[in-house]
Image (cartoon, rainbow, N blue to C red; front, side):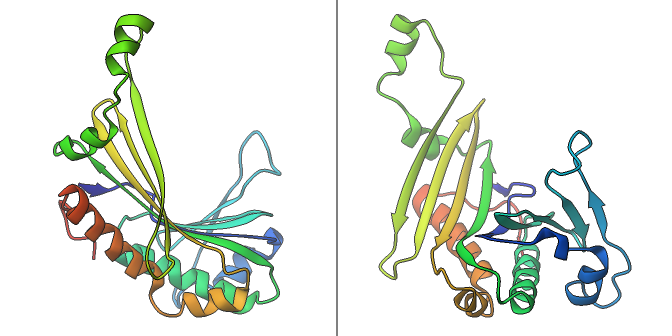
Length: 213
């Protein structure tokens, strides 16, 4: 099992003013000391579409309804960098209404897929083939889970062409930017990555092929 590229992210839903996120503002307030440039990209067919801003192995997507911070590397260091960027932004934009938040990770497995495919096996598979005349190309399962401490996890399992994907969305509904500021001051995203790795190992007997630290 390995981390899926550009799947480690933090997403904040709210009312964002994306014009704030200029290169000058990011270099002054968000980027680490020594960073000299940030790179902006716009959709070629829609100048008013979503902006992508790259710096320090991070991709930032500021939009009117959500702010997404994505690590280019699926590692603990990468998600901690995302968390650091989010904490800085929240600390500066404390009057921004923020409702929901998601901390996300995805992993792919191409060899030890038995446990995942067993969960995804459908009782109507033969009927689909024999009676319906179709073969199943991909399948998926979505579950909403909750722990005793009220932590909510949206877990998605998919099978596409023999590749299993396990996607984790840790969901928060704090509805208060100050609560999110507190949340991201204590390695929340990195701890949830540890939870995801442990979950894969204990529930599906899947281990990471490489260290994500």
